[in-house]
Length: 156
Image (cartoon, rainbow, N blue to C red; front, side, top):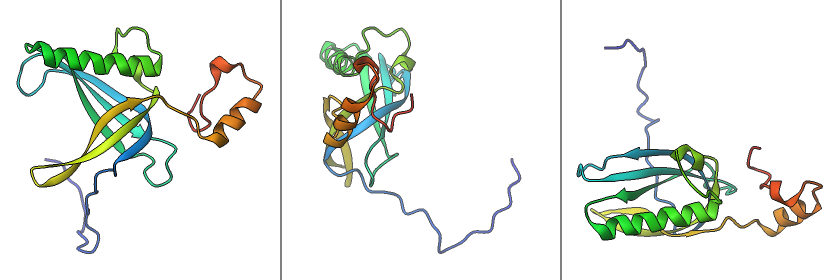
């Protein structure tokens, strides 16, 4: 047991949050982990994406579970196709550690579905990270070589 002093405030309670609305979101991969699913069968990569460059949803997290080993060949094939797509979009050629994906950017197309009476966001498609027109103009005027260009909001 840990000691902690706190007086509750009935007027300041956590309200939860609604799922992100359907649409495209620019994201950065902030965390990954290779785990065994609850079923105990196979392996999956858990990916946490963080929304970037969006005034309303900046910092919101999107979660993705990608099956990479499974006794069902279809589940494994689809999972590896998703991972291949993420790697192609982020220009990561090979992975020895999922941390190699950290900090990489891309765009996610989200949909919303109902599950057990609650609305949930889900990833419909993985897309390339496209600059806004204003950012593209700024990038073109920069003196840096094209290979080192990153959006201004991404820390170098």
